[in-house]
Image (cartoon, rainbow, N blue to C red; front, top):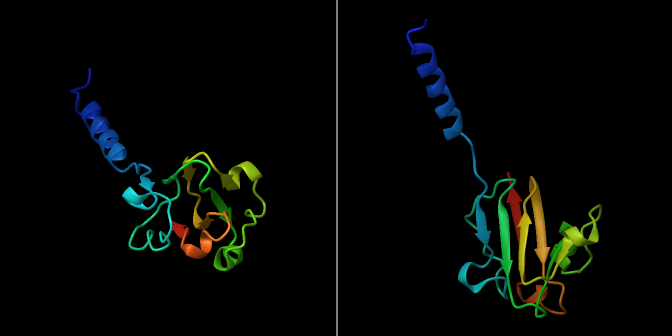
Amino acid sequence: MGDGRGSSAMIGVMLLLCMSVTYALRYKVGDSRGWSFNVSNWPYGKTFMAGDVLEFNYMFGMHNVMEVDKSFFELCIPIPKIGREFGETVHWSGNDQIQLRSGQSYFICSFLGHCQRGMKIAVNAV
């Protein structure tokens, strides 16, 4: 029979592994204001990770969230991101949860004039 030291070491290793697990964070876009006009600076100073979730909260029927390519983001042209399914790029529930993929993502409101009024964000997930 062993003296139990092996199982103690194994438990210690398991605890260290569990402590190094990274958990996805949830971010409310626009904080208390939600997904609204003049929110384009909201991502500044935040570090996003692939797997984090952006929560877009807004009044149903008044706005939407569309993921677009960089050039369409810069020009506020509401054309969904190329290479993705329409349902993955356009959201309109008023409480949209979007999990970030690694790299740069661009989101706008595609309602007429909303993007031009600052209803757009660019985030980079590492």
